[in-house]
Image 1 (cartoon, one colour):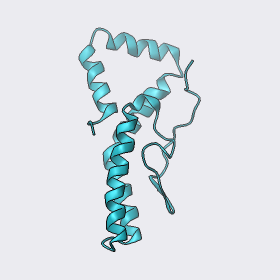
Image 2 (cartoon, helix red, strand yellow; image 1 turned 90 degrees about the vertical axis):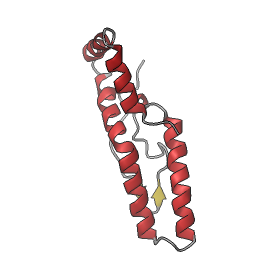
Image 3 (cartoon, one colour; image 1 turned 135 degrees about the horizontal axis):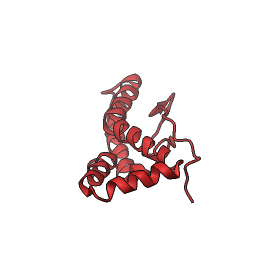
Length: 121
């Protein structure tokens, strides 16, 4: 059973007054991996930015812009790559083909895992 029918379309990291930490926006495909690390990293960065905001060192717009910029820089590449891999799971032939390609080339599989999992937190 797969979750290939679930929509993981890109959404904004900030929506009006709501800041999405981790996967609260519901856009991170499960194959992205290391989701808890993403949640912790985004919460840590947001907490620091919120502290600056409540100390009047940042305006609300700066807080929004800074968090959106952080999220895009830190996570968008791996989320987009993972979305493509998630799409493959909708087509058994393509899934088998990818697995068949990764078996003789484990370094390729490891490189893809590194790209989708990001750095540790």
